[in-house]
Length: 317
Image: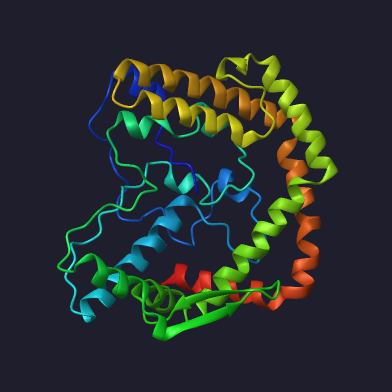
């Protein structure tokens, strides 16, 4: 899942002002349109099969999620279930500047300097977790809700994966129908197929000798930067962010502790981004990913192209 960032030299501003009630939200999607050129942090983030698969910003992914939620709610209404409208967390003001998926945990100096990993500032502003579905009032009991959302075994079908394996889902559930309405018929087959192939590419790229060497240079750099204060010798870029997240969880509810975590986050993210740049980690990952994609594109190019077309069509709607 993407990290959530906030605007300006935001984390520093939040620290200077103390805990604030709310940041100004983005207006309804004005910066999220698929026709807009992506900022550098989105465009330069390696994501499998991009192109042809569009590189989504966090804002674009949120817009698609909102559209799918509306279709799911309409499906529930047709089944006679009343439910309070979904109120997902507002996108941060940097939502269009960060990638929706960052599989290699890469950072730019600019975003690291402005808001670290984007972890602490939403907590300081009192925002709910962005990766947790909020509870909603509904007229349905738990069993009825589950049947409506996830469907019934009487309508179970299997989707064949590129490996020859399969994934089963119930086609009468509103989760399934919302996706089909937004992205088109056969969306589950395309989504599961793409996710499997993309995960294989990310794993293969991560094992490439060039990436292994770049990560070793990165690791030496961050160790020299004094990041041992986070309690470990880092081996992978995502580990630093995970350590900050652990400290954040322990500090929740303690304003002074949260501010200390925020300053640690800025220090860690800035050193992390600088070391990624100096070790040329992004360049190594990009080259390794291109090589790892070749067999999948040769064997499953039609599926990847169909997935990309469905995603682009949903973005245009």
